Image (cartoon, rainbow, N blue to C red; front, top):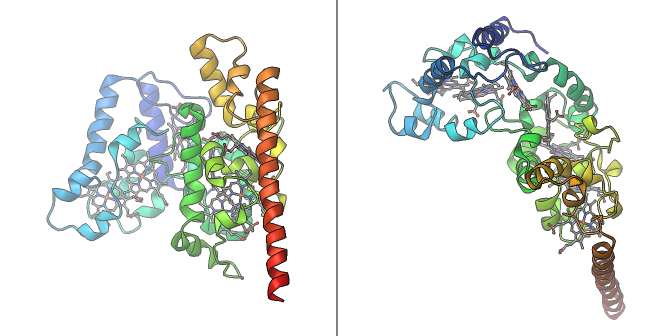
Length: 331
Ligand code: HEC
Ligand code: HEC
Ligand code: HEC
Ligand code: HEC
Ligand code: HEC
Ligand code: HEC
Ligand code: HEC
């Protein structure tokens, strides 16, 4: 982590504010979200200064005439999105140092933006070890950072999102925004000695029936990171190379589906709590074919699942036979 006095100061100032307001200091984070109304109002006012320019409204109605509006278009933020993020209630200036207080912003302002580890030392340490072992960190080096995937103004941790579909949509967007965009992907891949061309996601996953459906129901990281039996390590940042990625259907389509301790662990607790269920697991794992804990449903579903897979295999076999016949005819 690059130490930066300015942002460290900002983080400490926030801690001091939070402590003064009686909000206390979260064990893992320097300074928790404030609860004191006076402090909340102070932060709202402070952020409104930035929003005066950095929103759609600001762009339409610029508070100053001497601004590069074309440049500003690239830096438009949505206050609602920020309010729904992990960092809701935080002051923009806590992460964006003194260089951004005045406009025009200081030329070196960018260097003073706080990095995740400055406030999340404990978590960042664990995540960083996994991240350093990922294909991205190993092959794409310094160009690939935490912010490449996590937009600190938007991202909300899965445990707080709860609904598996919404978690999947948020988390997969992090990957797909790049892996489905030639423009963004090539900005990173040109650093590779091979200048790798973006592989087509649908073509590389053609062995997976209905990939589109799977991608709306499970996360990319489910198959692309190692499964750990330790619950607190269930979210891994170690994105593996393709030959080490998981192709086994039974990882999810089985009674002890890995999804129970991964994606569905957020839902299990919620579903259980909402309905007062003692065994939330029963409900929590009922999302995926073959993974319910009810033997009757399971048998019926596995039967259907088997038929579907047989159907697919049959379809594959017919294709192969047809291709062979075609090849014979042409040769
Ligand atoms: C008077 C309008 C105005 C205000 C107020 C303003 N900005 Fe900006 N900001 C801009 C414009 C215009 C740009 C586009 C690039 C440029 O001209 O510097 C910009 C660019 C930026 C950038 C991206 C460029 C870079 O250096 O990385 C960041 C980050 C930023 N502003 C943060 C903030 C924060 C945080 C606040 C509040 C403390 C704030 N701005 C207040 C107008 C403003
Ligand atoms: C938790 C820290 C944090 C907070 C709080 C924060 N930012 Fe940022 N912001 C960052 C980081 C880190 C970057 C650089 C992202 C990158 O390098 O891609 C950034 C980049 C920006 C940019 C330029 C890039 C872009 O995509 O627009 C603007 C503008 C900006 N922030 C505005 C704001 C405003 C306005 C607020 C308050 C509502 C705010 N930020 C609150 C960490 C934060
Ligand atoms: C200036 C300090 C600061 C910086 C820099 C910062 N955060 Fe945070 N972060 C916070 C605070 C404060 C909270 C709210 C803690 C709370 O609600 O208890 C938070 C909350 C979070 C949470 C939710 C924690 C939870 O368990 O609910 C995540 C995840 C997170 N941040 C990720 C990041 C990432 C990724 C970055 C870098 C892109 C980052 N943060 C940068 C201060 C910071
Ligand atoms: C390749 C994309 C990617 C990169 C790079 C990345 N993350 Fe994540 N991160 C994710 C995804 C996906 C999740 C899962 C979503 C969740 O649990 O909220 C996640 C979850 C998290 C969480 C919450 C879950 C947990 O394990 O506590 C934290 C904190 C976090 N990331 C911090 C970081 C930090 C710090 C870095 C940089 C060292 C980083 N991330 C780099 C994609 C990424
Ligand atoms: C900003 C762009 C970007 C983002 C975001 C991103 N990746 Fe990548 N990813 C790349 C590039 C570029 C490579 C090529 C690296 C190489 O081949 O050495 C790569 C490589 C990979 C590989 C290895 C392919 C192989 O040939 O072994 C996998 C798997 C992968 N990414 C999955 C993911 C997942 C899952 C996420 C989200 C959690 C993600 N990526 C987010 C750009 C990105
Ligand atoms: C059901 C498990 C599974 C899911 C879900 C999944 N993948 Fe994969 N992915 C794999 C496997 C296995 C491979 C290796 C395929 C091979 O080599 O034949 C792979 C290959 C890749 C590659 C390497 C492509 C290449 O040819 O270099 C990338 C990049 C990738 N996946 C990204 C993603 C992204 C992004 C998502 C989420 C939208 C995702 N994957 C979802 C299992 C999965
Ligand atoms: C990472 C977990 C995971 C893996 C690995 C996985 N699946 Fe799935 N699969 C799911 C989930 C979750 C659904 C439920 C999607 C829904 O209906 O919302 C699903 C649905 C299906 C369906 C029903 C599709 C439909 O059209 O209704 C079939 C068939 C299927 N999977 C086959 C497979 C096969 C074959 C493999 C191995 C090549 C596989 N799956 C690997 C999680 C997984």
